[in-house]
Length: 213
Figure 1 (spheres, rainbow, N blue to C red):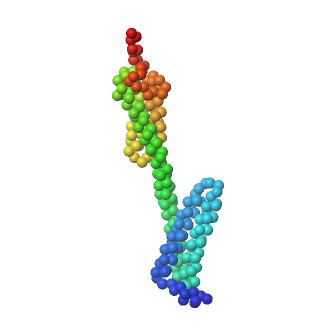
Figure 2 (cartoon, rainbow, N blue to C red):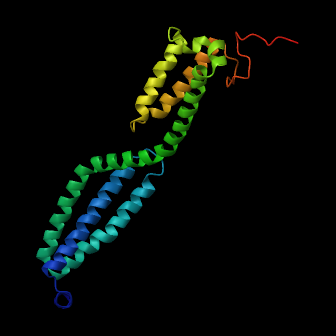
Figure 3 (cartoon, rainbow, N blue to C red):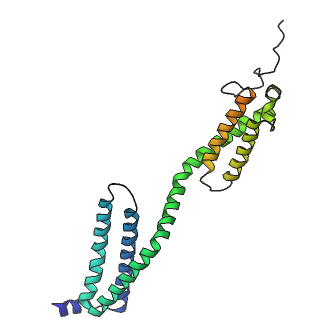
């Protein structure tokens, strides 16, 4: 039976290379997948591990046995290739998983960053009104007085958010949240009514009431 298989499926150099490539890929993917799921602390981690091992074995075992039946020497060579691929994948899997985790985190951070940019722009627009609107500038001069602790803290938070906005730092969204909080504290300290958002047509603190006819 073995000679018949050998004659029916001759194992040439090209076939050996194909089997080696399949084997290396299957072993490497299985090792990386097992380490990925083994590192998760969830309670259902055994189920993914089973399917990782089952799926890997479904490719690795035939990739070893079929060439070994045709040529025992080729089977030994492929076993050595599988072992080397497994060791290399085991050693390199931390870097691969770190890269994958960082890439996945960046994809998850995109909506959060876009929302932070909107909040950031809204906070800056809200603050600029105290500089551009004459009534607000007169009514709430403390909003431009960096000698006040609350205004100074807001300016520092604004600089931090601007610096992080220009990078891909994950701390940008928390910095924007701190910026919004700092503006609220500065408005409270300056006597701005809750909610802010005054226009030049409103009467802020310090503005004189219009004379009655």
